[in-house]
Image (cartoon, rainbow, N blue to C red; front, side, top):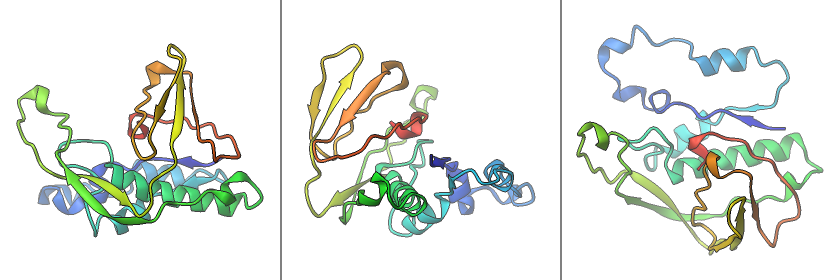
Length: 182
């Protein structure tokens, strides 16, 4: 078991908040949760995402979900933590693909329905040195599809149950997440 909580974008970009909010900032709900979690295996991905944001945005200014680049940073910390906690498990064999750079694209604007026409190019996507392995996805109401490595299967909660298989894989993981994990 490894538990990761996605930090809110304002936790990673406090410098973008209005000055009047500085007196309101204090211990976050995530800090409170981690302080009371006992020996539950929580992974606090804020550190890796703060380091990553020095290179490129880990959240878009018009989207509450982390960017693919931000997800890559968090995933690396989750894998390293799980491998450290469970050294004789399948996690020990999971590697993080080496990046060759970061590319930016137009961000999906969650506020467009409210009249915001912003179209910032701050949706950051990792570029990898080597092609990722292909994987297959089987969704409960479909026979499955082959998705090239690195592309999103974009399986939503309404499409569950679903299974993703990597032919090079040797283990099983149950991953429960919210929309940040799409």
